[in-house]
Image (cartoon, rainbow, N blue to C red; front, top):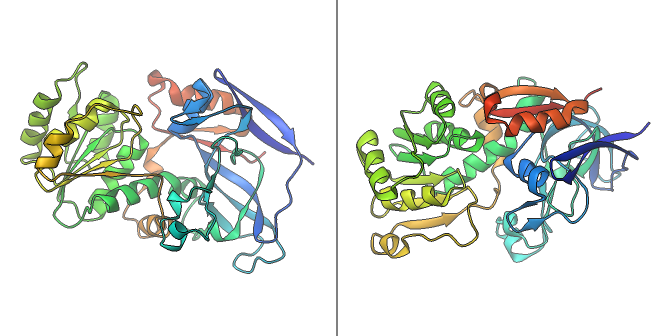
Length: 349
């Protein structure tokens, strides 16, 4: 018996490789992977062989949004049992550095993250992972929902960084999966009013159905100052918090211009490495610009949002494919005509 893995080669080439089934280390578990979501970073590696500062120098198994079933335990594992249904938190820190000890383990310089070169991901049939970064799924949470705990954790962490709470007014830039989850999370955390922007009419309509109070289409090209004023008119005020999820430099500029004095701009999206922004404008209005690098301590909170029914991630799933259809799944996810929101790959035979 072998392990079928979806391997990226760059230039939009993904092939299924057969590899040995791995053995878990003493604190690891062997998982039979059930569901894996396709993320924007996966698509960048597939199309360009890189994502931001991370460059693929050799073929890499993709996937980091995953859930599965425990089928084998490492000898020191006591927190999980064979048959447990779990979601995988894909970043593994050193656990011993100062950042880890202070709870900011996402910033650990020795973190190992699934599907970030040169580390292989979990879009495969079998995968080993540390037991303490696997989270038990209640019976009412499906494997698909478990896989989407990963992008939901990004949204939770971003809203926390922005101090979203009761009565907040929020701008979310970008109505992709993370932007939609951020909008939903902000509402679940007590935001009074949330406006979301995008360049795509279909995604804005979808955002409205999911609970956005206002939507606004971004013109191309965009006059950032003028558009910021339009956001204020639609929202009825300047937002307390603006959360950039699109990865467009222009949206970051808009967020700075529109946010009220003393508010926060949170960067979830990844634009250019050195964007030109109105920094002095932000400084004199004491607008805090906060970065987000993945998440930390967010999985339990994201799981609570699902189990309580406050957020329904199932509504984001637009397409499902089998592991053998992984190439088609990636082509669908990147094709605007498919109107894909979230694509899930099922790894069972």
